[in-house]
Length: 290
Ligand code: SF4
Image (cartoon, rainbow, N blue to C red):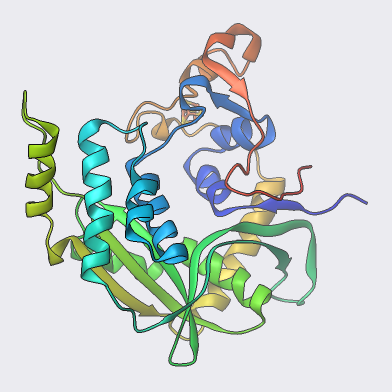
């Protein structure tokens, strides 16, 4: 009998965005060539914070955030944002249970309590913290504007529910909510011919307490039960639902990198210059691949 296939939160978002995209990435393992090692500003800051929580060495943390894949201006912003985090939160009122913890755990049928034979939940959580005897998910976010709408949305965040349901099973203890650490990216720009050191000083001057928003969100009664029902239903849908394109998503945010493949009716041989293949789950080090 085959082992259950792992499902990550990234797979959910891909499915919800466009089932055709999901099929290319997670069933056929196709990735756009230019995005093979895509890094983002958010992942650079994320690396810096991970190193900070693991080492409590701010120099190492800043170095970890200093990714050469970023533009000079974004390198400065990422490293100064991490340094500012250390200045904003020199001491914490929680203890860190784990950082960047990978998990794989059964998907449980909410009606019967039986594990799924098809799927298991997998992923990597930013952190687990303990505060006043309770466990919380630690979630780091970078945002260009951490306004009220952004912060209100986090109370219904599906990703955190996914992590909390999984980690409750792994740790065999309740998770009561999530601590959201939002780091707002400085908006100032590198001027034409501006010296990068001068820009760094301007960024350092620009970053203040308002760039860091921290919110504890306690789960409402029944919230995780509802989400578990939804996750179960989505997993069934992914297994049995039709693969169909969502053309409303083709130009959402930016042009979908799979557009040439869709135009070639999914025939990879017709557009080999655009794509390569790579196993999914690259965020996880130990996975079962079916
Ligand atoms: S190009 Fe459009 S239809 Fe094709 S995978 Fe991308 S979003 Fe889906």
